[in-house]
Length: 137
Image (cartoon, rainbow, N blue to C red):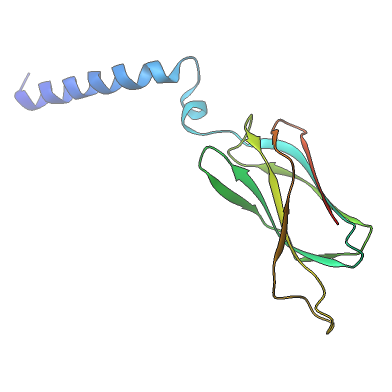
């Protein structure tokens, strides 16, 4: 073995002795990529007394400490009505998360306020078929 080959061999052994114990019985894809939390029911109930326009829906990823966005199509929700969908939330399976809705209210001139209002759900562990509801009052 040449000196360079020996260094590469030692580096490889060091890497494997460090990483393999961290993997445990998980496959590499499970160890390095968190799975999505699938078939999650999301509901925003509008009880504000007026229509609202939902402009964004986010969920908290506690591992990365960021809000992850779930795109919505700026839907108008009449008072007393729900907005509801089923989604797959990426990278948060089996994590304690919360959901946040961002919305606008009427501005009085047949338009929508510039101010963005937001409300969060309670925190709960995200599993397949989990449900998160936010009631806006």
